[in-house]
Length: 319
Ligand code: CTP
Image (cartoon, rainbow, N blue to C red; front, top):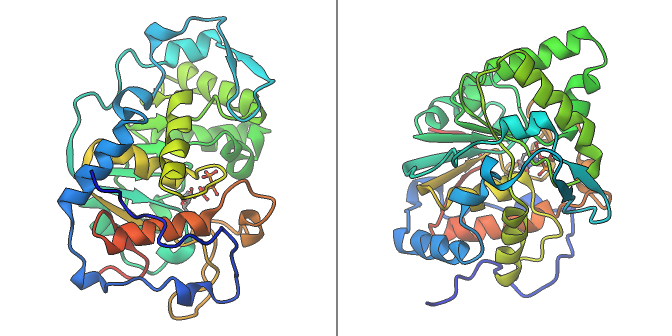
C-alpha cells in the first residue's frame, strides 16, 4: 500500500527551542478535524508487521519460569533473573485479548492539561490510557478519572514515591495502586537495569496486599518493534517515550485515538507558560540533551498524523 507520510520533512532532528509553540500550532482547528478511518486501518496494518500488541503488551506466564535470565533491552550487558514474585504476576493470557474499542484516550502528562476542562471528555472514551501513575483525583476536572491502563516506569518509584524510604511513602504508593481498581498496570521491567529493585518492591507490595490490578510487563519485542516502525517511517527517535509506545500499542485495539496532554514545549499556543507535568515541578531540562527522548520530534510526527486524521491531538481547552 501507499506509504504513510509521518515525518513531514526530511530535515534531521535539530530542534530550535526558541519559538516552538508557534511552529507547532495545531491545524486544522479542532472543530474541523475528521477521522480518517482508511488511514487508521493502514497504520494498524503496518504496525502489525512489526509487532502484535495483543501478544506483546505483556510477556505471558507460559513463556518464562522463575530463575530465567533476561538481558535488559537498553543495557544489553546487564541481566536480571525472573523472580518468583514477577513470575506470579505475569498474566496467563493477554490482558487485551480480543479487545476492540470505538474510541480511546491516551493521556500524556503535560501541564497543557491544566485548566483544559478535558476531564469529562476523556472519561467518555471507551478505553483510557494514562502514563506513569500520574495523579488524577486532585485534577479530575482537567484530566478525568477513568483509567483502564496505566504505565509505570520504575523511575516513578523514585521520582514520585521517594523510593519508598519509609512507611508513609509505601502507604502512598499502596493507596495509589488500590485506587486502580482492576485496571491494567503496565510496567516496563525489562528496559533498563536501574529499575531492578523498584520493580521488585512494587511486585512485592501488590502480592502482599492483594492489590486488585492486572499487571503486564511488555516484551522486548514490543519495544524493538515500536522503534522499528517509527524508524521505517523516518521518525528518528532515540528511545520512544511512554506516550508514543501507548499510541503505537493502541492502534491495535482502538478505532479512533484521541491524545491529551502531549505538549513537550514550555509555552502554549498563546505563548503562556506550560508546566512540564500537570502535577509536579519537574522542569523542561529533563527533556533536553540528557534525556534519551526526542519528544519534539515525536510531537511533530503525531501532529502530522493529526492533520491527516489518523489521530486527534487536543492541546487546548475541551469544548
Ligand atoms: N508528554 C508530552 N509533553 C510533556 C510531558 C509528557 O508530550 N510536557 C508525553 C510523552 O509522550 C510522555 C508521556 O506524555 O511519554 C508521559 O509523560 P511522562 O510521565 O513525563 O513521561 P517521561 O517519564 O518523561 O518519559 P517516559 O516515561 O516516556 O520515559
